[in-house]
Amino acid sequence: MRLRVRTSDGAQAVVDIADNATVGALKTAIARTTDIVESEQEWHFGFPARPVDATDFSASCASLGITNGETIAVSRVTIENASTTPLGTTIEGDSTLVEELAAMDEDEALARALAASMEDGANADASTSVDVTSMHAVRRVIASDNSCLFNAVAYCVERSLKEATRLRRVVADAVAADAATFSEGFLGKSPKAYVEWITKPNSWGGQVELFILSKYYRVEIAAYDIQTERCDIYGEGEGYNDRIMVIYDGLHYDALVLHPVFGGADVSRDVTRVPPGVALPAVQRLVREQHASKKFTDTANFSLRCLVCQKGLVGQAEAVAHAKSTGHANFGEY
View 1 (cartoon, rainbow, N blue to C red):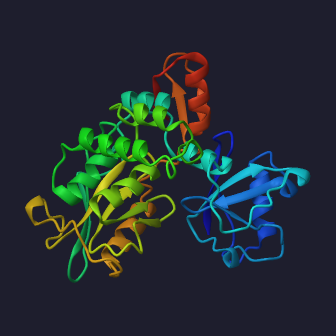
View 2: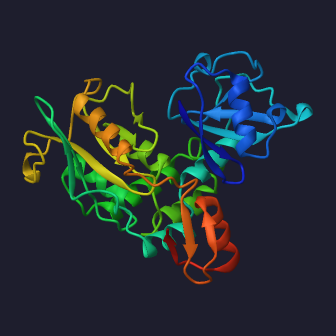
């Protein structure tokens, strides 16, 4: 299985391990790609992130609930400072949750640079569809304007592509109104700073926004990740009657819909809501084919060049660090 690893400094990596791999094997793989040795690793995963007992090196990763496409937030912990918090609990202000959410959300400086230098949806066709016996899964491309998440969700729920400003305010109001849930620990910055940040038109949405918009619209939001072929469902178990779908390529969100016609260009016939829990082979097949065609950007390992000073960079973390240290904000992928 393929897993994403994020560390407290924002570095990201993808590791491949056997489906029956042990905790020890995963720790070793993580140690090879980070500077955190096996004995000093503390793992969190899920959303909100929860701590996992990774002290039994012989236990299988599957027994801990780790599945293909999971994101593991890894922090360094010494034995004397190891957490004694009971597993399965959520800590208000948990530092690793801060790290994970901070890593999940694209840094604003990099967002501006990538948006200015690259087209987020460049890897997507005008519409991508997969033929099945009944319905066809179609990837409806959303404009690359730094608001793709908001517009993808709004298209599926409201059939509108002009709601980004309003939905940013919905998120901001939700954060401001619920300090217990949206604490600084949860957000990675103070609620006030987050409100100011997310209302800017060039700030990219992520897990926090999907979490809030699911509650706002009272729908499940199934978010498919092309690189890992993983699907995370926001609002699952809340009793909502409908599910909408979005698809993510590492930089950009598009809407994912069903259509009665293969390659259907008539958007008036798009089926944007589906019943929760219904198996959709067409969607699963589309995601597999998008992955096989490499219609994603590996933000942990993609190669960039600063077009100001021509410095070569690898991955999001290096680009963020370079932008912050130099003020350069013009990158190209190569």
